[in-house]
Every structure is written in structure tokens, then in C-alpha cells.
Length: 56
Image 1: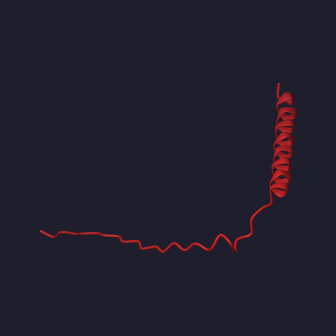
Image 2: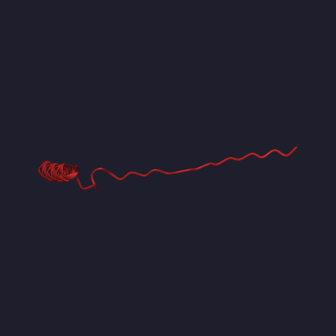
Image 3: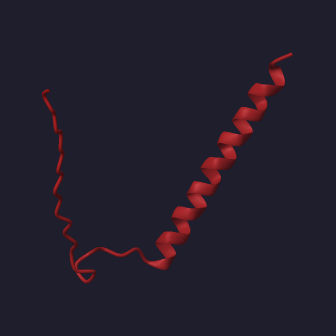
């Protein structure tokens, strides 16, 4: 009677860099990015609402 054994081993290595070498966002830049994202979302919602009003 044949027996089949399957085994899969996945080995990974995670490397991180120093936080000193990474570019960090200034609070002003982060604030600007949040504002841009908020405006883009508002435009998308407004566009979808206009589209939905035409379906009757």
C-alpha cells in the first residue's frame, strides 16, 4: 500500500532598515496629504450621487 507524504516548507527572512535612514513625513506634509485625500473622496462621492440621480 503506497503512502504519499507532502510537505511544504517556506522560509523567509525579514529585514528592516534603521528608522534614522528612512524618510519621515513632516506633520505639515502629512496634513496636506490628508486634506488632498479628503477632497478626492468628497469629489468621488459627489460624482456618484450625480450619477445615481439619473437612474429612474
